[in-house]
Length: 401
Image 1 (cartoon, rainbow, N blue to C red):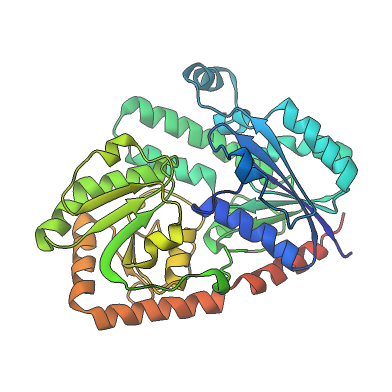
Image 2: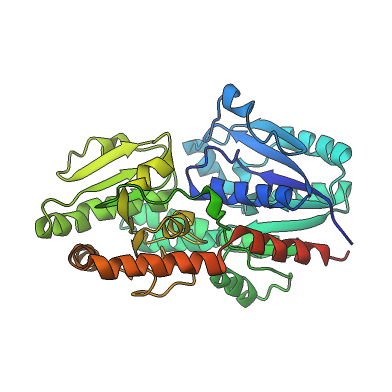
């Protein structure tokens, strides 16, 4: 059956388009719209990701509907403690469950009458019982990452005993929550083959289509007057990003700076902690939140991705490859991207390996450029948005109830 009306639910407004999550959600919304589908976006307007009224008035005017619900999802000590002691669900799920969203969801379902409801966060799976009472629409989950895996890795890497216990407990809750949630959908859209394999290994039988972030090459700004400098960009309210930069500055940069005194590294992102802004490290520039991410990276040649925890796919890596950048990343950072070290990027998992990779790039610029060219070809072959959306829409059309 041809499905025309798509209701997309998000746990934040996909704006600004400066971090991977927002970019991935926006690409899916635009993908359905460009394919001729009617699209309605119902988004939580959260206290942790606020958007001004002026900005809101200009967003998603091309869709068939766009509504927001104000949600307080702030993290409070007593709320977190209460969840730890008295709830079996992860705190993340409880923080996104609100009566006001249920009310608006019912209103939109009744007026828009969706054929498909796509949920862009596993934590919004708490609304499935309500949804199934009010519509027979096909349910699709966009699996941006395997959440429990992210927190398992963070727990493993932390030295604090209390923090290790809390993160480990949270990871176990997320594991149970996710495995139950996956079974409630008609179709899963994991963003990587690794995530799809992990879901399948749990015994889950829900059909899936691997749907990586799609790059629209028309929107990619190629490098301009590039300098052989390094950069990183990512929202700092995501703990793995913050831990990655902390590791890079404390353990990796001293080795880089000693070997290459004139080399420069710049990093940017929303919610930048003052502790980073005030570090005053020679050769390092902390830009905080930048108004134009594409302009920030345009004149820099090397993307540094020192992630030690994470899941899903790093949109910023795909965009960097599409723009002809050279990527130096940990294995975790490259997870989900079908790239080969030495051909499409340079792998580095230890401080000395990062320093060595950067030094190699500066001493072998021709070979480094060849790696960037190979990466661009990879993006065109495997991560082009229109081809990805065709597979997704065909899969959704095959859903039967």
